[in-house]
Structure formats: C-alpha cells, structure tokens
Length: 284
Ligand SMILES: CC(C)(COP(=O)(O)OP(=O)(O)OC[C@H]1O[C@@H](n2cnc3c(N)ncnc32)[C@H](O)[C@@H]1OP(=O)(O)O)[C@@H](O)C(=O)NCCC(=O)NCCS
Image (tube, rainbow, N blue to C red; front, side):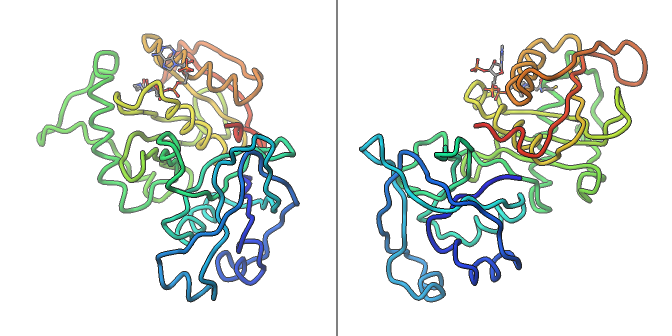
C-alpha cells in the first residue's frame, strides 16, 4: 500500500473520518531535507473548514540535515486521489524519502516543486477515456511497422476499451504532466504464460516525454496498483521496449524475474514473469 506522510491536518482523526470514512493506520516517521513553514491558503472554503488562517507547509530546506516530524499513513490509490482533491492548490504531492528509508507521498509547497514533479500517475476516470482512445491511435500508428493493422471506415484503429471502462479485471492508468496527458497503461488478466494475475496489455509514453523517467514512474505506479503475479510482454522487434522493461522490472523486483520467449499461441514474443508483493514497486 502507498504511504502518505502527514505533518498537518491529515493526522487529525476528525479530518480522516471526514475525508476517507475511516481512521488511518500509521507510524511516526520523519521527512528528510524539508523544513516547515506557514502559508495562507487562497481557497476560502478550505480556510473556513479548517478554522485556521494559516496552514503548515513544507519547502526544501537549505540545511541538508533538516527533518520534519509527522506520520506515515497507509492509504489506497483511491484515498490518495481523494487527498489530492482535499488539498488546496498551494500544495503539490510528490514522492520523498523518510528517515525510516521508506518512500512516501507528501504535500509540499507547489511553487517550490521543480518541473519533473508535475508528473502524475493515476487510474483513468470516465472523463479520461476520450483522450485515452486518442492516445491509443497514436500508439497503434507508431507500432504499425511491427503490429500491422488497418484503419476502419472512420480512419481509426478503434481500440476496444469496453472492459477497461468497467475496471473490474481490466484497468486503465494514465501519466500526466500537470494536467496534460503524456502516456497510458492498460492492464488485463494474465493469460499468456500464467493463469492468474496481471498482464501489461499496452503501454505508451508520448515521444516528447521519453527518457525523462515518465515511463518508469508510470510502470511503478501500475505494478504497485495490482499486487500479485505479473507477466509483461514485448514483441521480438521492439528492442526499446525490451530494454525498458528489463530495466524497470529489474529495479522493482531487485532482479527477481524470469524471462521466457513465447513462440506459440495467440501472443508471441519476450515475456517477463515476476511477482509484486505489497510494498514492492514503491521505490522512486
Ligand atoms: C518503451 C517506452 C514506454 C519507454 O518510456 P520512457 O518514458 O522513455 O522510459 P524511461 O525514461 O522511464 O526509461 C527508463 C529506462 O528504460 C530504458 N530505456 C528507455 N528507453 C530506452 C531506449 N530508447 N533505449 C535503451 N534503453 C531505454 C533505460 O534504461 C531507461 O533509463 P535511463 O534513461 O536512466 O537510461 C516508450 O519508449 C514508448 O512509449 N515506446 C513506444 C510504445 C512501446 O513500445 N510500448 C511498449 C510496448 S511493450
């Protein structure tokens, strides 16, 4: 489960019950390299609800030994999204290191966050599916040299996303740079080399955002979102994808994966098999 480090109102049980409908389970910890300050929040509703004029805020510390005390709570991806909606615009969520060695999400001063932290990886919502379908068109065209397909009467490849919309055994995830889409991942039930678990059905990062770590961040988010057995496959001619997945899966599993070459059946190519346990895939 992802960790959310709180140094402010989220430690308050009343806020937890209001926001998540449950008391969070957490452990005291410290955040490295940040210092605490106060900020005036522009949103009048937030200030009214909290009853305070000024709120705790974090910014990068000039003193390398600075730490901020707080609590690391175990939360679900849905709860993280709920927390995003709760926090006012002055706060931005990023992954940071705790004194315990665990990575955790934390809200810091949005105006002090460098550009790469604008990267957001999250599940697709109903309103994202038009953009997702459009990105699939770009993806299918890019791979059309090695994955030959024809356009339909409307000039589209028209990937079928019916199952992913319901999100029961099929899932869709997105990478965004701020509020702009930059990539996606589709997950389906594993069926190529394994009987249970997850299969990385499709995975794509827009060209302009490649080699910035966006793909690796999206992959970690997706793997962490679906713990259990995994299989990820690449077509034999897709050498870049093979380099990418060997690197990412190697990092996430500490090298504990098996690679096989599938030469029979409806899908053929290079396949990595591995398991994601709770907590794996969270390393930034
Ligand atoms: C494969 C793909 C998703 C990689 O996305 P990305 O955002 O560029 O990947 P990252 O920047 O996170 O790269 C992580 C690591 O993967 C490896 N990698 C990524 N692209 C690589 C390339 N072109 N050549 C060699 N290694 C590469 C590197 O080890 C890289 O780490 P480094 O930059 O520190 O060296 C992207 O190239 C893509 O969308 N390709 C077209 C669609 C596709 O093939 N999808 C995969 C289908 S299985």
